[in-house]
Length: 238
Image 1 (cartoon, one colour):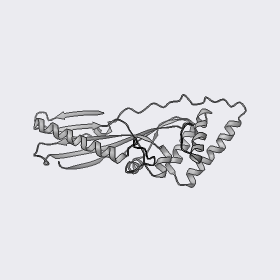
Image 2 (spheres, one colour):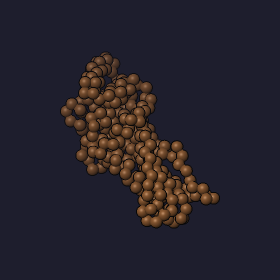
Image 3 (cartoon, one colour):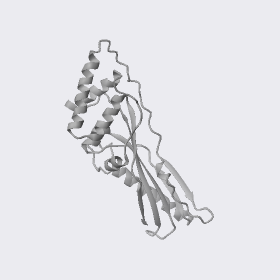
Image 4 (tube, helix red, strand yellow):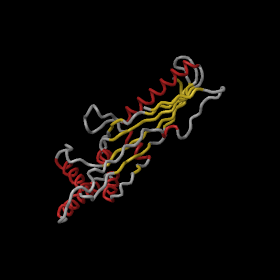
C-alpha cells in the first residue's frame, strides 16, 4: 500500500493535483515462458488449432461480447503490446457488485473502492485532529484480486487485479464536522493468457485449451491489459 501525508505549510492548505489519483502499484510482468514452445513440423496442429480458435472468435461475435472479441483479436495479432481499456468500460465493470465465481477470496470492485475511500478519510481525520491544521492524505491499495458478473467482463479478463487510489484534504473541525474534499480513481490490470490446467468445464475449458495451445504454437501472444476509471469527486462533512 502507498501512503503519502502532506501537512499545511506556512498556513497554506495542500491542494489536490490532477495526477494524485494516478498512483498505483507496478504492473505485473508478462510471462512468455510458454510462448512458441510447441513444435509442429507437419502443420497439422496449427491448422486444427486455428479452426478451433476461429470458432471461439465467432462465439464472441454471435454472443455480443465486444471487449472479449477485441482482446481475442489482439491475442492473435501476436504483438504482445499492452491493451488499454477505455474509461467507460472500466467504469462499467468496476460498478459490478457481484462476481461469477462464488469464491470468498475474490472481492468485488465496489468493496475495494469503499474500503479505500473510508480508510483514507479516517487517516486524514486522525492526522488533522493531531495537528489541528489542514492535511492532505493519499492512500493507494495493493493489487486486489476481483471479478465481475457480466458476460463480457468475465469472458474478457475473468479474475483480474484492481487498485484504488484516494486523495483527501481534511480541515480541522469537531466530530462529524471535518470538511472533506476527496478524489478517487480505480486502476485495473490483467495478464491475458490461458492455462490448460484451469477448470471451467465443458465448452469453456475447450476454448481455454485451444487458446493455451495457440500460445504454445506461437500463434497467439500474451499481453498486459490495463485501464483506469474516471475520477470520482466528493466533498462534505465527516
